[in-house]
Length: 405
Image (tube, rainbow, N blue to C red; front, side, top):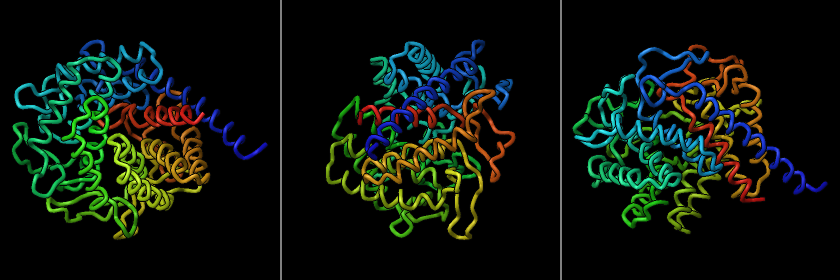
């Protein structure tokens, strides 16, 4: 059997396993997370699938649910997925969209009343992302209109016309806010790689339904931001935090974001059909993909973070990091032809199967510790625990294998 035949057979198995896993992930969300009493989806479930009474509901979680079911429907045409996308859409429009001040609330309570009303650019970006994918699934013109409206809102209030880039967060009425952080672990800085990556991701999908020249320029500028500011030319990792003048404010390496960025940057350049920019991004992608294995353990799991300043490695392997490794290494294989990257992608999936899949209660565990013990006290569903990274990894690789064969 030739090497090409062997790889072809491996890809068929990989695709079949991810088709099954996609069905398993979304089956979990349909079976356990629908909030029949209060609408939408539960705000929190623990590892035993027990709902936390009166848990707040997050805009990021709900936008990611919307994206996941919409994208899964676009791949499979299963009506149950579209039904759940419709449910997520209706809840977002009714409860999360701030009809008076624009944007979306960070959280609402379990009844849908506004709770944390700050305007986090990250959350608005994910809402644009979900609405754009939902429009591709449903053809709902109101969803497209809302995605465009939110895009215009971001550019109006958050975009830095003088220095480029997007400022991180604001009060409900778009005034400066003291605490800009997405979470307690983040640095309190005005510009972050994470938010810019997901604004780019959102605009990429929006451009598919609204190929506007102004939006194309925004995407190109965001790609330039990554080339100039975020991709460190010495380490080939991503710089994570900056002040408003683009001065770096962190020495952390986030291995999951490194490998996630590679394929999202490439996708953006492909969507706007900029050949020169695409070539530049592909070269950067290989450099990042070459650096990312510094964070790989021998078992194929990718560690969470590393601080270059003090050499401290956060010895945790989170679910989303492994999902992004699957896609990012697969993409590196496609653009380089180096079979070692395909092997790394499949080894990431093998690690997930052995350590991250919850075969008893469904879905994926949050993560594992240094000794591959399940991290205690983490959500199965929560403000950050969602179906987006893992379902997207399945969808993305299924699509790529289908296009190759």
